[in-house]
Length: 297
Image 1 (cartoon, rainbow, N blue to C red):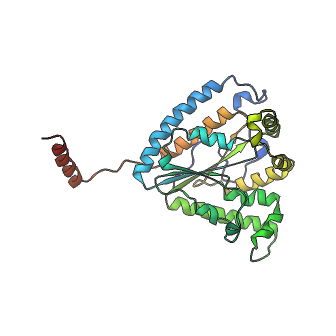
Image 2 (image 1 turned 180 degrees about the vertical axis):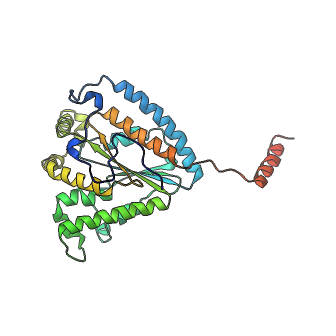
Image 3 (image 1 turned 90 degrees about the horizontal axis):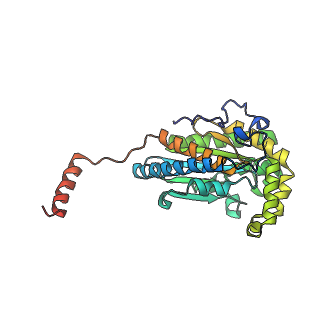
C-alpha cells in the first residue's frame, strides 16, 4: 500500500493529534490579521503550477486504468470546501473526474448501512473522485446530534462510546479494503477558525451575490463548535492511517489552503506506480503497417 505524503499538516497515526495545536493560518501569518493578502499572488502562482501537473498526472491515471484516487473533504460551514475543489481541479479533464456532495440521507439510504450511499459513488479505476462531505458525517454531525440515530433503525442498542468505536472500526476497515483494491484515499479537514467562520457568515449576508450561501442553520450549528471540535479530533485520531491519511489544512487563508491541498494531491499521484500502457511487439508491427498504409507508402 502507498504511504502518505510528508506534510506538516499530516494527522499522525498514533492518536496524538490535538485540534488546539493545529494551525488555522499559514505559518508566516500566524498571529497576523487573517485579511492580510500580501502573499496571495504567490500562492495562486504555485496553485497554477500544481494544476498543470495534476492535469498531466490525471491523464496517466486514466490511461493506466489500474488505480483510482478518492479525495474526501470535511469541514465546518464556510471553510471553503466548494471553492477548494473547484480551484484544485480546474485543469482536470471532466471525463476522468467526478464530485459527489452528501447531505441529509434519503429514506432509501437510511434503509442501508451507513457506508452504502458513498460506496455506490466510489471512483472507477482510472478516475479521480471527490466526496464533498462523506461517510464521516456519520461520526461527526450524527455524533453531535445522536438523536438522528433514531431514523436509522439500528438492530441493537449499545453504549454510545462503543457505538462510535464500532463506526470508526468500520471506516478503517472500509478504507483499507479500498486501498488493497487500488483506490488511494486522501482526506482533508479544512481547519477554519471560529472567528474566520463568523467573518465569512457576515460577508455572505452583506454581499447580495452570496446571500444564497447563507443559512441560519449554519449559525445554529456553529454554536455547537466545541462539540464539533471534539467529534473531529476523535474521528481524525481514530481513522488517520498510512493507507488513508488525514491532513488538517489551515483554512483561514483560502489561497494558501488551496495550494496546500494541490501539493498533497499531486504528490500522492506521483507516488502511485502509474504508466501509459505499452503495446506488444505484435501491436507495434500492426501499427507500423497501418501507418505505412495511412501515409501512402
